Length: 176
Image 1 (cartoon, rainbow, N blue to C red):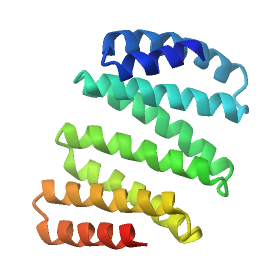
Image 2: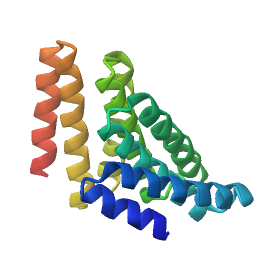
Image 3: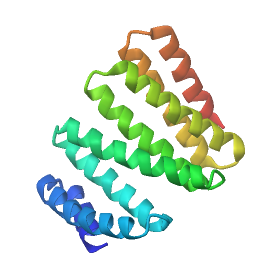
């Protein structure tokens, strides 16, 4: 965990190369643990978190292909955890976040159709969580953010009426 924490601090300080190195060390350790016991959800989730952190650093460095690979691995792990226990809202949220990360890289790469499809997955999960617990302000905020991201994707594709509708849903979600 120390390498992961060091990576978080370095990233927060804008020291991306140092963060990448620290996350690399953390990944080596976390991969070994996750491979040793694939049924250990905690180790799998920790690996997904570190991969997501690495993806974030790589994306900030403009290494989009490598960032996408890290995020896609995060998505794979998150999907398995969410499928293992569909009632675990935390894992569902992590799955939505992984979709969102993949979508952001795809959009940055100009793969707008794929980014839009992935954003649809984020939106569907966020909507489900918000509907399951309407009093949870966090779920409502994440639903609003998913609508906003969808609006941005649609706007980037020139689908302005659809983007406006998505932004309208963002506002309605934010009012809840």
